Amino acid sequence: MTQGSLTMTRVFRQAAALILAACLPLGAQGDAQTAVNAAFNKFRTLNEGKNADYIPALAKVNPNLFGIALVTTDGKIASAGDLTTEVSIQSISKVFTMAQVIQEQGPEAIEKRIGVDATGARFNSIIAIEAVRSTVGTGAPEMNALVNPGAISATSMVSGGSADAVWNKIIGFHNDFAGRQLTVLQDVYKSESDTNQRNQAIGALMYAYGYIKTDWKQAVDLYTRQCSIGVNAKDLAVMAATLAASGKNPITGKQVMDPAKVPAVLAVMATAGLYDDSGKWLYHTGLPAKSGVGGGIIAVSPGKFGIAVVSPPLDDAGNSVRAQRAIADISNALNGNPLAAGR
Ligand code: DON
Image (cartoon, rainbow, N blue to C red):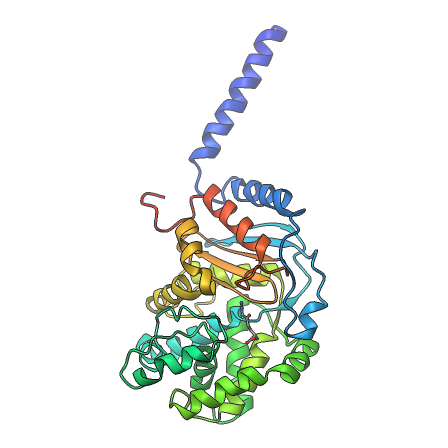
């Protein structure tokens, strides 16, 4: 064979490999890893945003921390950056406690007691509570379980005979989603407990207005504890992938949640997951997602993958800057938008 025909054979082989790769399903040929690498390299030097500091411990977290993990519904993992450093899960925990109430009591329980509508207000707004006060008990309060008043109420709805019993259920459910034993970051829990007077006021008001029917102080404390659970980017991605896989953890194989109840969770994430910017986020990505002030964001492409990014600096709405940009890029590269036909 001549040198020329050898080169041609190599070119044909490479072209055939590329065509084959494009025809394979997501995760089979590493295009998820390519997209993750591209986003990591593109945004690692992005220096916008600022760590949350209203909880003193969060201001001390390294702002350069940046980890991306994507887990497909068949359990393949693509990742880049820091996958081991734990940050506090913060508001992302609201998804899983809401999911726990939906699992135990059905989607109607959350809809009737708390509501499934956007408030249009900040996550810890007290005016939002006053605004919906007259709708309590009507079966359709204009609120949701991903803003603090609704989230503290959702925590109060987890059944159990004592604070320890309720806590064991909450952490157990989070563990099942993550596929490992998670622990509370004690420095964050202490820091937030020392400074959570606003959430105590929210808890007291929610009790006064009949949303919370049990001990509101216990509900605020357990909510603070759940926000302090330590997670890394991979944990969060597995949790998101479990939602993407209809409630079955794709790493452990455990069916954590009834598949029929998962869409209710995703609906509230789509409506209110990124607070005031939820509409903008959905417009650009179509992905149900949830942010936390610890710097994490999870997003779910149903039937395809769960993705998570950890990067502490936040924008004015309280959402991680790098996480939003990286997830949008990666999902768009992988046709992750569930609102796009024929994806
Ligand atoms: O209630 C709080 O202030 C925090 N523990 C959680 C807030 C949070 O993560 C809002 N997220 N974007």
